[in-house]
Image (tube, rainbow, N blue to C red; front, side, top):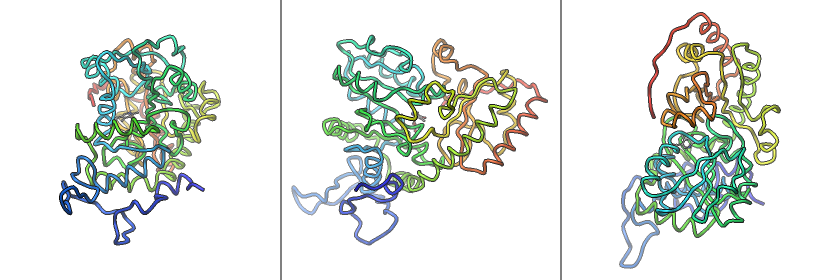
Length: 395
Ligand SMILES: *Cc1c(COP(=O)(O)O)cnc(C)c1O
């Protein structure tokens, strides 16, 4: 019987593949760029760390096991992983991408991929009939679910059936739920993307990214790409992510529990106009989530009554920090319009409902009481203030 997910975060089932013979419980950091060969035509299995390094390999095996993939590749960041992924495509290829993606991914598609001759059609995959947009040169559908930051839920199985029928790839960025709550490959996706910077690493201390696939032919192509383009994750960073993953299960459970409590509190505030959280039964994606995931995650988006109120919240938070990123033990609050989604075209922001009143919360694992007390204080102070902040940072 296969290990449960919490065990898979800590142990590989096939320990023979572990190259360390000392019995070390913590996997060693192989801080080496290159490896000596026993003789001509002989290799220890490792030649040069751009191709593979034992620490990175251990991490990749753990992540492949967590996503039930045949292979996983670890990159220096989520964007490095997605950039490498785009090397699967050629000029003239066409992609269908969801309208509400991580801002950096939109920037990559709009500026780099398009320049390289890849055509991109952006549609709301949760609402539109995706089939209508498939052309002869369409090669893939690219989605996140729940989406960032508007929490739209896309039916992965339905998308995979559409993709399979037309012989195109389904690529799912699974960063928001992590493999602890959702496994897109099991639902028919061909490639899973992760920003390991987020829940996998979990401590806001290391960047990383992953591509995981269920197909040997794709794994082979991606191995060639990582070897050739060179953005593989460094040994020490691989070790930090390995260490982070060990507690993925308890972190996800606690963060989700906190998220539910905060969501219920937010729902009762007169200043809050709407709360977007797929764990709410009133959320349009609730039933799909229940079918395709084991949890709802800890990302919460909410809209307040005015721009001033939103900016005053950001000004007054102390325990909760006003910062980009998500998925760490610390609760962070983000202003998508000037931060994560600053480079998303204005029309698309408007269409998606990302405005100056929308805030995104990555709920951490602190005491829920402390987080709610913080919100109570911040809301009170925000009501007393009406300062217009000029926040401008683009990451
Ligand atoms: C952060 C993020 C990325 C990019 O990952 P980096 O590690 O920051 O390069 C991609 N997709 C999603 C959903 C993200 O949240």
